Amino acid sequence: MPYLTIRHTAELSDDTRDALIYELTALTARVLRKQDALTAVSIENIPRNHWAVGGRSLAEQGQHTAYLDIKVTAGTNTVDEKAAFVAQAHALLTRALGPLHLASYVVISEVPAEDWGYDGRTQAARRQDGPHSYRGVLATA
Image (cartoon, rainbow, N blue to C red; front, side, top):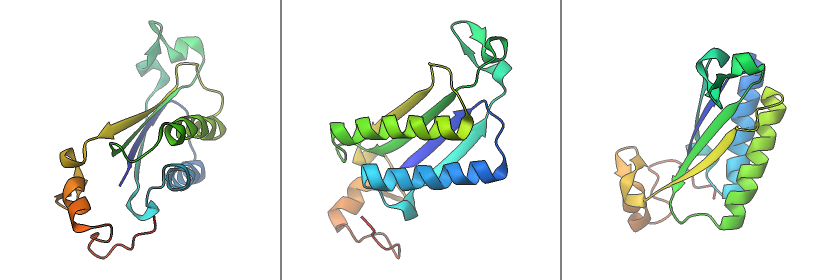
């Protein structure tokens, strides 16, 4: 049950936005072994003059940037999986948004299983009930 938040400064067409959502969902399933049916993605466009790096707005610098934060349950991925995700997600953002400022981040936030969940149940409670306790959502591990 990952949740991805993307903030960026580029202008996106609807088709590019939809493709980015699809590709990030597929990447999350492929590299981090997460269920695409439970992967949530939100995208927010921020004007370049509202985003600064090094004390100067990106509008001044004539550059674009992106920040991707993915929340996953702590301990569910290896160091190698996380490194592969960071590299591949950054490459995907660059393809979708164009050249990015060096300070464009991909962050994997690991949340303890007892500290988050969906459909009113924590991930820890779901683990106790077994891998197929998704109330009608098929597990696609």
